[in-house]
Amino acid sequence: MHQAAVHSSGGIPSAPHSVATPQPKQQLRECEAPCRDGSLNFDTLSLLTPADRSYCQQLTFGSSARGCFNMEPNMTFLNQAMCGFTPRPVLNAQSYFVNRMELNPDRFLRRELPTLLRRSAEKLAEVVGADSEDVVFVPNISHGVNAVLRSMDLQEGDEVLCMNSTYPGVFNTLRHICYMTQEVVELKVVDVKLPLESYESLIQQLAAAITPNTRVAVLDHITSAAALVLPLDKLIPLFQKRGIPVLVDGANAPGQVPLDLRQLKPDFYVGTCNKWLFGSKSSSFLYVDKEHQSMVRPVVTSLSYNQGFIEEFAIQGTKDESNYLTICTAIDFYQNLGYNRVCAHNKSLIDWASSYLASLWGTEALLPPWQRAPFASAIRLPTGVENMHIICMF
Image (cartoon, rainbow, N blue to C red; front, top):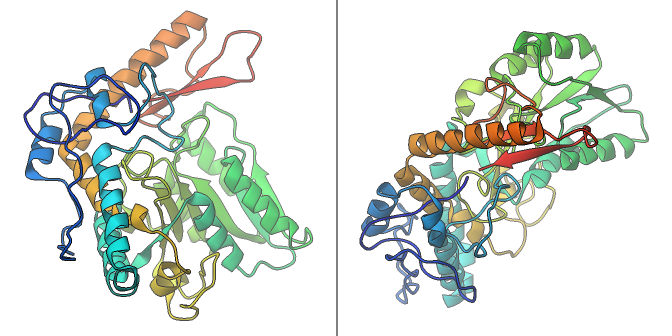
Protein backbone atom coordinates (compact mmCIF):
# COMPACT_ATOMS: atom_id res chain seq x y z
CA MET A 1 0.00 0.00 0.00
CA HIS A 2 1.33 3.40 -0.90
CA GLN A 3 1.23 4.78 2.59
CA ALA A 4 -0.44 7.86 3.84
CA ALA A 5 -0.41 11.07 5.79
CA VAL A 6 -2.21 12.96 8.49
CA HIS A 7 -3.52 16.37 9.33
CA SER A 8 -4.48 16.42 12.99
CA SER A 9 -3.21 17.41 16.39
CA GLY A 10 -1.56 14.87 18.64
CA GLY A 11 -1.30 11.22 17.71
CA ILE A 12 1.01 8.73 16.06
CA PRO A 13 4.39 9.20 14.04
CA SER A 14 7.80 10.05 15.49
CA ALA A 15 11.18 10.41 13.81
CA PRO A 16 13.22 7.30 13.01
CA HIS A 17 16.28 6.62 15.11
CA SER A 18 19.01 7.54 12.65
CA VAL A 19 17.49 8.33 9.25
CA ALA A 20 16.27 11.81 8.47
CA THR A 21 12.94 11.77 6.62
CA PRO A 22 10.45 14.45 5.66
CA GLN A 23 8.09 14.82 8.60
CA PRO A 24 4.53 16.13 8.77
CA LYS A 25 3.95 19.07 11.08
CA GLN A 26 2.36 16.83 13.70
CA GLN A 27 4.32 13.73 14.57
CA LEU A 28 3.27 10.35 15.84
CA ARG A 29 4.22 9.98 19.46
CA GLU A 30 7.11 7.97 20.83
CA CYS A 31 6.05 4.88 22.75
CA GLU A 32 5.78 5.60 26.43
CA ALA A 33 8.24 3.93 28.78
CA PRO A 34 7.16 0.51 29.97
CA CYS A 35 5.20 0.42 33.22
CA ARG A 36 7.70 0.08 36.03
CA ASP A 37 5.03 -1.30 38.36
CA GLY A 38 4.52 -4.24 36.04
CA SER A 39 0.86 -3.37 35.43
CA LEU A 40 -0.76 -4.05 32.07
CA ASN A 41 -4.36 -4.28 30.94
CA PHE A 42 -4.48 -7.81 29.57
CA ASP A 43 -7.88 -7.20 27.98
CA THR A 44 -6.74 -4.45 25.60
CA LEU A 45 -3.23 -5.07 24.35
CA SER A 46 -3.33 -2.21 21.86
CA LEU A 47 -1.02 0.65 22.83
CA LEU A 48 -2.76 3.20 20.61
CA THR A 49 -4.05 6.20 22.55
CA PRO A 50 -7.30 8.08 21.81
CA ALA A 51 -5.15 10.73 20.10
CA ASP A 52 -3.56 8.04 17.93
CA ARG A 53 -6.96 6.74 16.88
CA SER A 54 -8.17 10.21 16.02
CA TYR A 55 -4.99 10.71 14.01
CA CYS A 56 -5.64 7.55 11.98
CA GLN A 57 -9.27 8.41 11.38
CA GLN A 58 -8.30 11.81 9.96
CA LEU A 59 -5.40 10.45 7.94
CA THR A 60 -5.27 11.83 4.40
CA PHE A 61 -3.71 9.16 2.22
CA GLY A 62 -0.70 10.31 0.24
CA SER A 63 3.04 10.73 0.36
CA SER A 64 2.96 13.27 3.18
CA ALA A 65 2.18 10.47 5.64
CA ARG A 66 5.55 8.79 5.11
CA GLY A 67 6.36 9.89 8.65
CA CYS A 68 4.17 7.07 9.96
CA PHE A 69 6.80 4.60 8.74
CA ASN A 70 10.57 4.29 9.06
CA MET A 71 11.11 4.13 5.32
CA GLU A 72 14.13 5.60 3.57
CA PRO A 73 13.65 9.10 2.20
CA ASN A 74 12.88 9.50 -1.51
CA MET A 75 11.96 5.82 -1.88
CA THR A 76 8.76 4.68 -3.58
CA PHE A 77 7.97 1.26 -2.17
CA LEU A 78 5.94 -1.04 -4.43
CA ASN A 79 6.35 -4.42 -2.73
CA GLN A 80 4.26 -4.42 0.42
CA ALA A 81 3.41 -8.05 -0.37
CA MET A 82 6.99 -9.14 0.29
CA CYS A 83 7.08 -8.37 4.00
CA GLY A 84 5.51 -4.94 4.39
CA PHE A 85 6.34 -1.77 6.27
CA THR A 86 5.45 -1.77 9.95
CA PRO A 87 3.92 1.45 11.34
CA ARG A 88 5.80 3.19 14.11
CA PRO A 89 3.07 2.59 16.71
CA VAL A 90 3.45 -1.16 16.10
CA LEU A 91 7.24 -0.93 16.36
CA ASN A 92 6.77 1.01 19.58
CA ALA A 93 4.42 -1.65 20.90
CA GLN A 94 7.01 -4.32 20.15
CA SER A 95 9.64 -2.30 22.01
CA TYR A 96 7.23 -1.98 24.93
CA PHE A 97 6.81 -5.74 25.26
CA VAL A 98 10.53 -6.42 24.87
CA ASN A 99 11.24 -3.93 27.65
CA ARG A 100 8.47 -5.38 29.78
CA MET A 101 9.99 -8.83 29.41
CA GLU A 102 13.37 -7.51 30.55
CA LEU A 103 11.86 -6.03 33.73
CA ASN A 104 11.26 -9.55 35.01
CA PRO A 105 11.91 -12.27 32.40
CA ASP A 106 10.80 -15.14 34.63
CA ARG A 107 7.46 -13.54 35.49
CA PHE A 108 6.86 -12.44 31.92
CA LEU A 109 7.70 -15.72 30.18
CA ARG A 110 6.10 -18.04 32.72
CA ARG A 111 3.06 -16.11 33.95
CA GLU A 112 2.21 -13.30 31.56
CA LEU A 113 3.15 -14.49 28.09
CA PRO A 114 0.69 -17.41 27.79
CA THR A 115 -2.23 -15.11 28.62
CA LEU A 116 -0.94 -12.35 26.33
CA LEU A 117 -0.53 -14.76 23.42
CA ARG A 118 -4.09 -16.05 23.76
CA ARG A 119 -5.46 -12.51 23.99
CA SER A 120 -3.62 -11.66 20.76
CA ALA A 121 -4.97 -14.83 19.16
CA GLU A 122 -8.50 -13.92 20.22
CA LYS A 123 -8.23 -10.49 18.59
CA LEU A 124 -6.75 -11.94 15.42
CA ALA A 125 -9.43 -14.63 15.32
CA GLU A 126 -12.10 -11.92 15.32
CA VAL A 127 -10.52 -10.39 12.21
CA VAL A 128 -10.09 -13.65 10.26
CA GLY A 129 -13.46 -15.07 11.28
CA ALA A 130 -12.27 -18.04 13.33
CA ASP A 131 -12.63 -19.52 16.78
CA SER A 132 -9.60 -18.48 18.82
CA GLU A 133 -8.91 -22.07 19.90
CA ASP A 134 -8.32 -22.92 16.23
CA VAL A 135 -5.59 -20.28 15.80
CA VAL A 136 -1.93 -20.46 16.84
CA PHE A 137 1.04 -18.30 15.96
CA VAL A 138 3.94 -19.23 13.68
CA PRO A 139 6.86 -17.03 12.57
CA ASN A 140 6.04 -17.25 8.87
CA ILE A 141 4.19 -19.20 6.19
CA SER A 142 7.04 -21.70 5.81
CA HIS A 143 6.78 -22.77 9.46
CA GLY A 144 3.03 -23.24 9.20
CA VAL A 145 3.17 -25.20 5.95
CA ASN A 146 5.96 -27.43 7.26
CA ALA A 147 4.06 -28.09 10.48
CA VAL A 148 1.01 -29.31 8.58
CA LEU A 149 2.74 -31.35 5.89
CA ARG A 150 5.28 -32.98 8.22
CA SER A 151 2.42 -34.02 10.49
CA MET A 152 0.74 -35.98 7.71
CA ASP A 153 1.36 -39.69 7.46
CA LEU A 154 1.98 -39.84 3.73
CA GLN A 155 2.25 -43.35 2.37
CA GLU A 156 3.54 -44.99 -0.78
CA GLY A 157 1.37 -44.10 -3.75
CA ASP A 158 -0.09 -40.96 -2.16
CA GLU A 159 -0.27 -37.77 -4.23
CA VAL A 160 0.11 -34.15 -3.12
CA LEU A 161 -1.64 -31.75 -5.49
CA CYS A 162 -0.76 -28.11 -6.11
CA MET A 163 -0.82 -25.55 -8.92
CA ASN A 164 2.07 -24.17 -10.95
CA SER A 165 1.43 -20.81 -9.24
CA THR A 166 2.43 -22.17 -5.83
CA TYR A 167 4.89 -19.83 -4.08
CA PRO A 168 8.48 -21.15 -4.48
CA GLY A 169 9.06 -21.44 -0.74
CA VAL A 170 5.95 -23.56 -0.33
CA PHE A 171 6.74 -25.53 -3.49
CA ASN A 172 10.20 -26.35 -2.16
CA THR A 173 8.58 -27.64 1.02
CA LEU A 174 6.32 -29.88 -1.06
CA ARG A 175 9.30 -31.15 -3.05
CA HIS A 176 11.21 -31.92 0.13
CA ILE A 177 8.27 -33.68 1.78
CA CYS A 178 7.83 -35.88 -1.28
CA TYR A 179 11.53 -36.50 -1.87
CA MET A 180 12.33 -37.38 1.74
CA THR A 181 9.82 -40.22 1.40
CA GLN A 182 12.22 -41.59 -1.24
CA GLU A 183 9.91 -40.41 -4.01
CA VAL A 184 7.13 -42.87 -3.20
CA VAL A 185 4.85 -39.84 -2.77
CA GLU A 186 4.06 -38.02 -6.00
CA LEU A 187 3.92 -34.24 -6.28
CA LYS A 188 1.31 -33.46 -8.92
CA VAL A 189 1.52 -29.90 -10.29
CA VAL A 190 -1.50 -28.66 -12.24
CA ASP A 191 -0.42 -26.32 -15.04
CA VAL A 192 -2.94 -23.46 -15.02
CA LYS A 193 -2.76 -20.94 -17.86
CA LEU A 194 -3.43 -17.27 -17.16
CA PRO A 195 -5.59 -15.38 -17.57
CA LEU A 196 -8.35 -17.81 -16.71
CA GLU A 197 -11.18 -18.29 -19.15
CA SER A 198 -13.45 -18.45 -16.13
CA TYR A 199 -13.39 -19.66 -12.57
CA GLU A 200 -15.47 -22.62 -13.70
CA SER A 201 -12.71 -23.67 -16.11
CA LEU A 202 -10.21 -23.65 -13.22
CA ILE A 203 -12.53 -25.75 -11.08
CA GLN A 204 -12.94 -28.27 -13.88
CA GLN A 205 -9.18 -28.46 -14.48
CA LEU A 206 -8.44 -29.13 -10.81
CA ALA A 207 -11.27 -31.64 -10.56
CA ALA A 208 -9.81 -33.55 -13.51
CA ALA A 209 -6.44 -33.74 -11.72
CA ILE A 210 -7.87 -35.50 -8.66
CA THR A 211 -7.24 -39.23 -8.42
CA PRO A 212 -8.08 -41.85 -5.78
CA ASN A 213 -4.51 -41.32 -4.50
CA THR A 214 -4.78 -37.55 -3.91
CA ARG A 215 -4.03 -37.13 -0.21
CA VAL A 216 -3.90 -33.34 0.22
CA ALA A 217 -4.41 -30.24 -1.92
CA VAL A 218 -2.28 -27.14 -1.38
CA LEU A 219 -3.87 -23.96 -2.74
CA ASP A 220 -3.09 -20.26 -2.66
CA HIS A 221 -5.68 -17.74 -1.55
CA ILE A 222 -3.92 -15.07 -3.62
CA THR A 223 -1.08 -16.24 -5.85
CA SER A 224 2.26 -14.54 -5.30
CA ALA A 225 3.46 -13.62 -8.79
CA ALA A 226 0.23 -13.07 -10.72
CA ALA A 227 -1.94 -11.83 -7.81
CA LEU A 228 -4.74 -14.19 -8.87
CA VAL A 229 -7.52 -14.62 -6.31
CA LEU A 230 -8.62 -18.25 -6.21
CA PRO A 231 -12.32 -19.09 -5.70
CA LEU A 232 -11.77 -20.93 -2.44
CA ASP A 233 -15.47 -21.05 -1.68
CA LYS A 234 -15.78 -23.42 -4.67
CA LEU A 235 -12.40 -25.17 -4.56
CA ILE A 236 -12.35 -26.19 -0.90
CA PRO A 237 -15.65 -28.14 -1.16
CA LEU A 238 -14.44 -29.66 -4.44
CA PHE A 239 -11.69 -31.49 -2.56
CA GLN A 240 -13.35 -31.99 0.79
CA LYS A 241 -16.38 -33.81 -0.62
CA ARG A 242 -13.87 -36.35 -1.95
CA GLY A 243 -12.26 -36.71 1.47
CA ILE A 244 -9.19 -34.63 0.54
CA PRO A 245 -8.03 -32.04 3.11
CA VAL A 246 -7.07 -28.58 1.85
CA LEU A 247 -4.10 -26.51 3.02
CA VAL A 248 -4.39 -22.85 2.01
CA ASP A 249 -1.39 -20.52 1.68
CA GLY A 250 -3.04 -17.23 2.63
CA ALA A 251 0.12 -15.14 2.85
CA ASN A 252 -1.34 -12.16 0.98
CA ALA A 253 -4.97 -12.38 2.05
CA PRO A 254 -5.34 -11.04 5.63
CA GLY A 255 -5.90 -7.31 5.44
CA GLN A 256 -6.27 -7.33 1.65
CA VAL A 257 -9.50 -9.31 1.27
CA PRO A 258 -12.26 -9.98 3.80
CA LEU A 259 -11.60 -13.29 5.51
CA ASP A 260 -14.12 -15.58 7.21
CA LEU A 261 -12.56 -18.95 7.99
CA ARG A 262 -15.74 -20.25 9.61
CA GLN A 263 -17.46 -19.80 6.26
CA LEU A 264 -14.59 -21.02 4.06
CA LYS A 265 -13.96 -24.05 6.26
CA PRO A 266 -10.44 -24.98 5.08
CA ASP A 267 -8.75 -27.82 6.89
CA PHE A 268 -5.61 -25.73 7.31
CA TYR A 269 -4.95 -22.05 6.61
CA VAL A 270 -1.67 -20.17 7.02
CA GLY A 271 -1.72 -16.37 6.89
CA THR A 272 0.53 -13.41 7.67
CA CYS A 273 0.01 -10.32 9.78
CA ASN A 274 3.11 -8.44 8.56
CA LYS A 275 2.04 -7.76 4.96
CA TRP A 276 -1.41 -6.12 4.74
CA LEU A 277 -2.40 -6.14 8.43
CA PHE A 278 0.42 -3.77 9.50
CA GLY A 279 1.90 -6.30 11.94
CA SER A 280 5.56 -6.59 12.85
CA LYS A 281 7.88 -8.98 11.05
CA SER A 282 7.64 -12.71 11.79
CA SER A 283 4.01 -12.56 12.84
CA SER A 284 1.95 -15.20 11.05
CA PHE A 285 -0.76 -17.62 12.10
CA LEU A 286 -1.89 -21.17 11.50
CA TYR A 287 -5.56 -22.11 11.55
CA VAL A 288 -6.33 -25.80 11.96
CA ASP A 289 -9.82 -27.26 11.92
CA LYS A 290 -10.64 -28.99 15.19
CA GLU A 291 -10.84 -32.34 13.39
CA HIS A 292 -7.10 -32.22 12.65
CA GLN A 293 -5.67 -30.53 15.75
CA SER A 294 -4.62 -33.76 17.45
CA MET A 295 -2.53 -34.58 14.37
CA VAL A 296 -0.73 -31.29 13.72
CA ARG A 297 2.52 -30.72 15.59
CA PRO A 298 4.86 -27.72 15.39
CA VAL A 299 8.18 -27.96 13.61
CA VAL A 300 9.95 -27.57 16.97
CA THR A 301 9.14 -30.04 19.75
CA SER A 302 9.79 -28.79 23.27
CA LEU A 303 8.47 -28.84 26.85
CA SER A 304 4.79 -28.85 25.86
CA TYR A 305 4.96 -32.09 23.90
CA ASN A 306 1.62 -33.93 24.02
CA GLN A 307 -0.03 -31.10 25.97
CA GLY A 308 -2.44 -30.09 23.23
CA PHE A 309 -2.57 -28.03 20.04
CA ILE A 310 -2.38 -24.55 21.58
CA GLU A 311 0.23 -25.42 24.19
CA GLU A 312 2.59 -27.18 21.77
CA PHE A 313 2.69 -24.18 19.44
CA ALA A 314 2.93 -21.66 22.29
CA ILE A 315 5.87 -23.20 24.16
CA GLN A 316 8.84 -23.94 21.91
CA GLY A 317 11.79 -22.96 24.06
CA THR A 318 12.92 -19.50 25.08
CA LYS A 319 12.32 -16.91 22.38
CA ASP A 320 11.18 -13.33 21.93
CA GLU A 321 7.47 -13.41 21.04
CA SER A 322 6.87 -9.67 21.18
CA ASN A 323 6.09 -9.76 17.45
CA TYR A 324 2.85 -11.63 18.16
CA LEU A 325 1.92 -9.28 21.00
CA THR A 326 1.84 -6.28 18.63
CA ILE A 327 -1.06 -7.72 16.64
CA CYS A 328 -3.69 -5.95 18.73
CA THR A 329 -1.98 -2.61 18.10
CA ALA A 330 -1.66 -3.36 14.38
CA ILE A 331 -5.33 -4.28 14.06
CA ASP A 332 -6.36 -1.21 16.04
CA PHE A 333 -4.23 0.94 13.71
CA TYR A 334 -5.81 -0.58 10.59
CA GLN A 335 -9.36 -0.44 11.91
CA ASN A 336 -8.99 3.25 12.68
CA LEU A 337 -7.62 3.91 9.20
CA GLY A 338 -10.72 2.14 7.91
CA TYR A 339 -10.56 -0.91 5.64
CA ASN A 340 -12.98 0.59 3.12
CA ARG A 341 -10.90 3.76 2.88
CA VAL A 342 -7.67 1.82 2.44
CA CYS A 343 -9.23 -0.48 -0.14
CA ALA A 344 -10.67 2.38 -2.18
CA HIS A 345 -7.35 4.25 -2.10
CA ASN A 346 -5.30 1.23 -3.09
CA LYS A 347 -7.69 0.28 -5.87
CA SER A 348 -7.41 3.75 -7.38
CA LEU A 349 -3.60 3.50 -7.26
CA ILE A 350 -3.57 0.03 -8.81
CA ASP A 351 -5.96 1.02 -11.58
CA TRP A 352 -3.90 4.09 -12.40
CA ALA A 353 -0.51 2.35 -12.25
CA SER A 354 -1.70 -0.62 -14.31
CA SER A 355 -3.04 1.63 -17.04
CA TYR A 356 0.05 3.83 -16.97
CA LEU A 357 2.59 0.99 -17.26
CA ALA A 358 0.58 -0.93 -19.86
CA SER A 359 0.31 2.22 -21.96
CA LEU A 360 3.99 3.10 -21.48
CA TRP A 361 5.16 -0.36 -22.55
CA GLY A 362 2.45 -1.08 -25.10
CA THR A 363 1.39 -4.19 -23.20
CA GLU A 364 -1.47 -5.13 -20.89
CA ALA A 365 -2.30 -6.33 -17.41
CA LEU A 366 -1.95 -10.09 -17.04
CA LEU A 367 -5.34 -10.49 -15.36
CA PRO A 368 -8.70 -8.76 -15.74
CA PRO A 369 -9.90 -6.93 -12.62
CA TRP A 370 -12.33 -9.70 -11.61
CA GLN A 371 -9.47 -12.20 -11.25
CA ARG A 372 -6.84 -10.10 -9.52
CA ALA A 373 -6.23 -9.14 -5.92
CA PRO A 374 -7.45 -5.69 -4.78
CA PHE A 375 -3.98 -4.32 -3.96
CA ALA A 376 -1.84 -5.87 -6.72
CA SER A 377 -1.57 -6.12 -10.49
CA ALA A 378 0.85 -7.97 -12.77
CA ILE A 379 1.81 -6.11 -15.99
CA ARG A 380 3.41 -7.77 -19.02
CA LEU A 381 6.82 -6.35 -19.90
CA PRO A 382 7.68 -5.18 -23.43
CA THR A 383 8.95 -7.36 -26.28
CA GLY A 384 12.29 -8.95 -25.45
CA VAL A 385 11.40 -9.79 -21.89
CA GLU A 386 8.01 -11.38 -22.53
CA ASN A 387 8.58 -14.19 -20.07
CA MET A 388 8.81 -11.76 -17.19
CA HIS A 389 6.34 -9.43 -15.59
CA ILE A 390 6.34 -6.70 -13.02
CA ILE A 391 3.99 -6.64 -10.09
CA CYS A 392 2.79 -3.34 -8.69
CA MET A 393 1.68 -3.63 -5.09
CA PHE A 394 0.61 -0.53 -3.23
